[in-house]
Image (cartoon, rainbow, N blue to C red; front, side):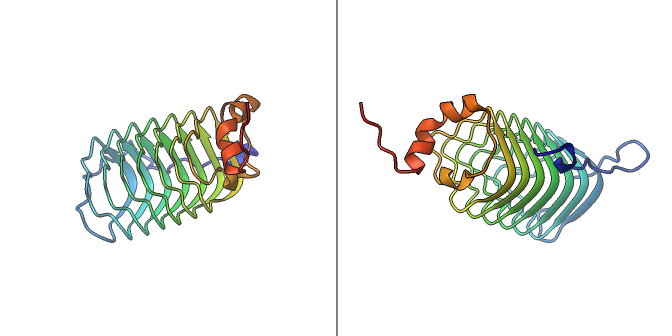
Length: 198
């Protein structure tokens, strides 16, 4: 992240202790605001075209959920399982994903602004044509991820494995520790069409 001000804003829960929310029904256009969902079972739910604001999701299951064309602002997901979840065409702003399973998830054509992915499984995640502004990936395996057509601005990757990912050339301008650049040099060489010779 370029400066501290580029980081995500935290959720703004009610002044009193966090309100515990019930899991929303499976339907389009769901709106949830100001509270915490703990252990909610949202796997295979349809939550597309919805709005989630000032929320904390803890140890929830969103596996194969449909969250397409939604808006998520000031949300924190901690210890959630979201394998195969679709965030396609979604706007995510001031969001933190911490210790989440997001393998096989889709962020196609999504807009991510001030988003942190920390200790998340992102193998084979799909970021095709996504826009990433002030986004940090920290200790996240991205092996096999789709990065083709990604537009980035102020993006950092720290301790991330990009082996087998496609579209790595779209990361031009991203910030990475030198050790990570070296560790992922094969992926970058492949993206640039460089052929290794012995």
